[in-house]
Length: 439
Image 1 (cartoon, rainbow, N blue to C red):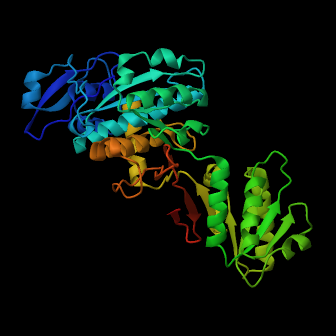
Image 2: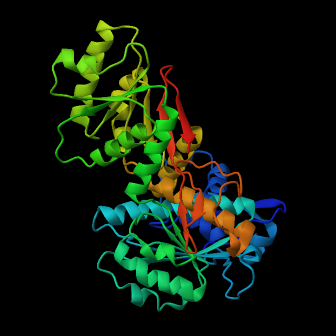
Image 3: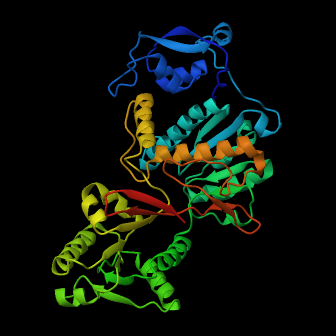
């Protein structure tokens, strides 16, 4: 798949295109070297949620006079460049090696991620950033070595993938030999990170996250009285976090309480301070136990109206937000997370609408939204390569990109590659606003 060059700044004229069977807005825009937004602007009515392309319809194509003479509907103006000139002076060659299929949920999620990446490439054309994209389907039972024999793979400047950890090693060797940047968007197990300087790993190992978050939590809430609630969930892995957090409190000589959902009302209430603000932490991320805790906190508040209670939660809790919004704000909930899907953001809403227009369906109702993840990743790395070339290291402050959903801030791991260290607290404030605090 090849994306075309951005439009020049010369005067625009218009031409028409007759819609053919199975054509999409994205495909038509790419065909003429324009963005989807430009196509929509030239065709009033396309912005409507129920708009659909119909075979035989005539739509307006905004284009320059020069392009009207040189391009036809059957011609893609390619920005492909096989030389080795500085990536800052040519199209960025992007590879995508992910399971791109409809066989299972992994494939469906990665198709959505890939679509978000395509939308980002489309929007970057307005900044003068042109991109050539080659995508390969790499399912769990795929043959990555066969894909890497494609000459187009060795010409890439950056490859996004893989999803499965077993493909990291051969891809790591390949990008090191060919001086290609490898962005690992989801896989956590990547020991090659510590020896290959070409790797960017997005997600952190869970134990590292727990250690950093526990330390930050202990610092932020040092004036609070912490209460760890044992919820009796034998399947939970959150005990690793509460254990780490308790150790952080102990090294700071900060007292805390431990109670249980099975405790009597009297014993449960005794764990709370009436003179200091309280911070409640559960050892589970499950919804039933959370609802039970909300009930017991409500009883405590009813008996002690002046008592101050905040809660520290888990990323999974964001899935309950639409049902527990009132309690989240009532109890001043803080959730540590590597992403935040802000339903109230105009920018988020716009991308969701554009996704619906382009692909004829809504994004999957998942956390994170995979299309937004792909959009953030593509804008961050392509803008970085365009500005800094292959010296781009993803460190904080390289440019002023405000992520739609996923913050990115990389640190080099010894003499190896770079790992994203961005994380944030999502704070549901009592005044019913939401703030994000990066750490």
